[in-house]
Picture (cartoon, rainbow, N blue to C red):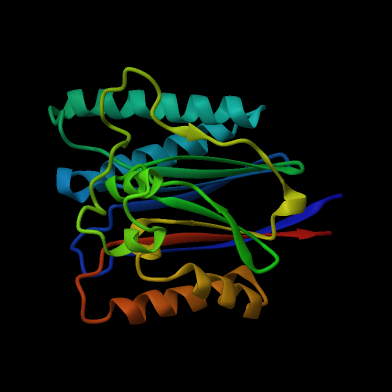
Length: 246
């Protein structure tokens, strides 16, 4: 069974002065790679960090053979490049970023992440899975101290436990088990500035109504902007991907 992969992407500065989100897509043979990074504004130079990682992923994917090996290499080498650039610019506490990645190869989906940029997987109009944030609120959910619905408005929602650009004793990213594309209708990669302003139920409603990934993304963007009106909006970015049987 073959699949047709189509996608649409979006990034916006919000009310900030600089857009520290970066997004990218690359192809290699029949395989596709999508990556989204959210630079940490509180540390400065987040835009440089996120762009460096996205560019590194795209370049390495040109020579990728095995998805898992590619993801390990991409995250590890991007981390090394970030640390090298920090030393070169003498900014050891700056240049940090999240990263979430989707690789579609043949009949499988491979996901990896670090930080709180998310990947959602949809099947039959419902969220079947999402990556877990590396954040204080997500940890509290896992411990049973708060509910999943409380993450969006938690006072510590921006405190991350894992990011790229910190020294690691061991790899801090997560590579998830591959998912058969038979169990995937759509994928959404998004930064926290996006998912904080739209509920999962609305993502699903718009997915059922949309006739293309562009239309689905446009519906979600409209809600994000509406919910963010009158507020201080973070950079917000997303990549909407459809997997359809040929």
